Image (cartoon, rainbow, N blue to C red; front, side, top):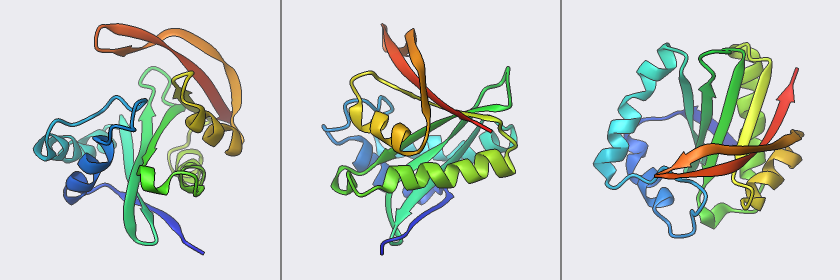
Length: 164
């Protein structure tokens, strides 16, 4: 059975992340680096963000191959809350990789980071992400109006959460 693992992101993940994120099928994930160098700049900031407890980012490995990424943004006003984000290469959609990555993230978040609440926000049209949240045992708390800004446009987000 294929195995999902997480490891801290490395700068050499940039090329693979660039390929995944720039697929035309990634319509709901707004972070699209323009170049591999742009992605490297982002990855080089990870250690500093982790040390400051701003973000904790991981590479998703499936049978040892890079298939995506996931991580937490820590709410700086309420550091007991972490928001999960994730993406998986479209060639691996539907294999249960994202729910498994969420489960591994929860162990880190509730365990190592001491979170008591984990949230997953998503675009209301992103039914795949909603299935991941439900499959992972998160409860829908509602729709947050104009919670996300994409360029000059504000969009609604659905909020799912899990607490311990």
